[in-house]
Length: 506
Ligand code: GLU
Image (cartoon, rainbow, N blue to C red; front, side):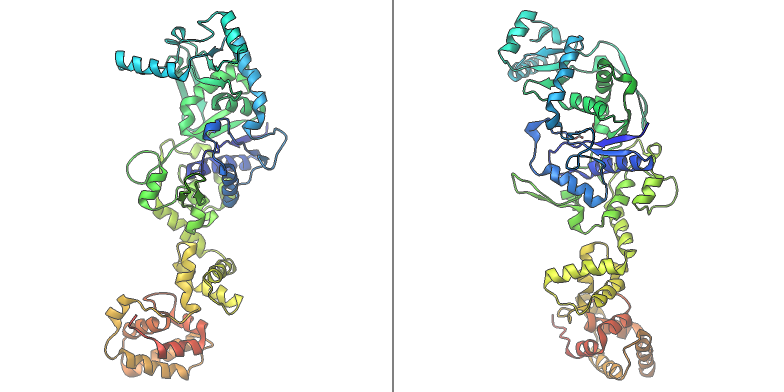
């Protein structure tokens, strides 16, 4: 039987990086086994629907290079893949459950239930639950006459269909990450499965769709583990237990400091994105930052995410998507939550930038130059500038500031270097050195270095005392790529001009 997995986000806002990781693990699992990866949009909770969220999810997955085989926007044999468009298919199952005695109609209003909750709290400090202990004291088809239920339904009165949770039964499931999970139904409540607006709740829709879409493995976040026994019961009551998918619940992503789930607030507080792409809230206009806009490469982001909860069991850390497809296994997904680590994310990005082809980095740099309105001489010139700085950048956005001096004479000069290295005699040294370079061939950086060293030797000067000021006047910076590589690249005219016309009084 071929593997079919799904990523089933609700379009309630931007996709959290924990969601991207869930999608990634599903994708890796499917691709390794030659299976099918499906994108299903779970939009049955109309109250939480956010315009633009679905588009955001699709764009985020595409940026990450996580491609789905079936799903919204591309279709497939089990569509539609948006639950609101499958609306009609859920009701018969809810009604079947009622008929078979596994579910019932409940007519209690929100106010009545709220009142009950308050009373319960007052009397016993207890929590009110709609369950085996309380259901016979409430307004539902178990307590009302058949006649009355029919009249209410015919009148179009508001209702919900609730599962009739069996009493004192053990529900077992084998989770591929957590092992055997056993839950006693006495701890579970009578969850709502269907509402009179014609929409199923997540629980019913999820089970029906996973069954109808022939899903073989449900790989999702740990927050759904408490719902899994309910889902197992639904499979059982609907007669599908023998073809029930396997379950794997992924560990939570934890905040970098302390305990608890990583939230947008942690990102804001500690200065890192928790979303793959920038998101502008359609109602408040609030902007949340994204990894793409922060200057991360998708392959670095994916490599980093894969390691939040999984490890290959070896020392190897660099895995491109193909490596991940080959090496990934659910057995090596940790049970414990994974702590988010920004430094590690930056480390991965730095690594991937360093190993990118010059022409790719050159392309990115040209885009930044164009956006900043800075002219560049030739494509090869930009590519080589990118080559010279690629060891030094952590984020894509570092390309321009780190390479500006290849394109413009510096107008500001690193204050720290001036303070430390600029002595009363330095200006004269720079001028003498300029005269030396005037008669040096710039076509090889080696020759520039030799000329420089000869000069130091004849004047009996130390390298540091001269190289830093030279770098300062030519690039404006206190550090950077090899100085003679820079001079060779910007050429004789620019080098000599900068050595003559610098103005250190920033
Ligand atoms: N719609 C659920 C979510 O937003 C999906 C949970 C599942 O994969 O079953 O996370």
